[in-house]
Length: 299
Image (tube, rainbow, N blue to C red; front, side, top):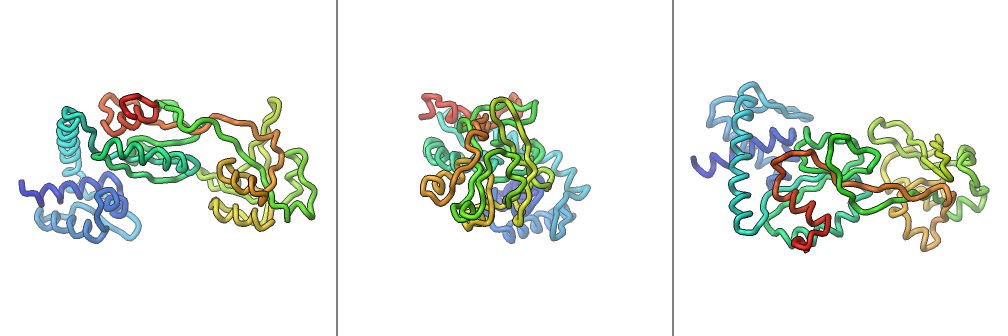
């Protein structure tokens, strides 16, 4: 088999696995247009269409599905042979795909340079999203998610320690409004409303004190999930915000935001790295888990 044949088949497999030319191109390190040309070359050589493309989606044809069913296991086996050869030489190689909740990105950014330096033959692809993603169906090796959203059949490793929420407002907002003394007082305030990523409905603020748990429905003039918009509005004095503590600790320390209802926001279990319980765990994922756990061989 020619090298170009292998490149075409690998490109086709990437599109099938990722379900997107853009994501597959990112994984392969090429442009979407170059990837599209590679797929067309493979289809021309085989004399049949393998993928149906629209502006919004891509799906395998009957012929493409038949090819994928035979090709993907072969490529996996071949990658396994390569990984085993590097492992025998004391090196870990291959891709590691992670789906990460946004609040975990800053900590991951601190860890990845050390991990990538330790394993120069590993490539890491990170996609940040607060949506509930099926990591198995989407082809991720692992995910990082809040403890309360973990699926029961996953293996979980603590990632980053406990978290806290923070209810905050700018001094300008509080200059003309009484600060809330109880979570129920929020119902009389302009609040910056975020949307639950799984449902798209307004998120109820979760507050707790002395075993009493409340989920407060809030209202306000700005509704949206983008952190930057809500934080900018909060700093401008347009309402009370509800953020992860790590997202606003600098503004609180500088006096640009004032913390409210502090005794109603206790620490809670934070994020976990989670992955399916497979026997044939990829070497990059195994190495990342060992690195995360502080294995001496990984430091």
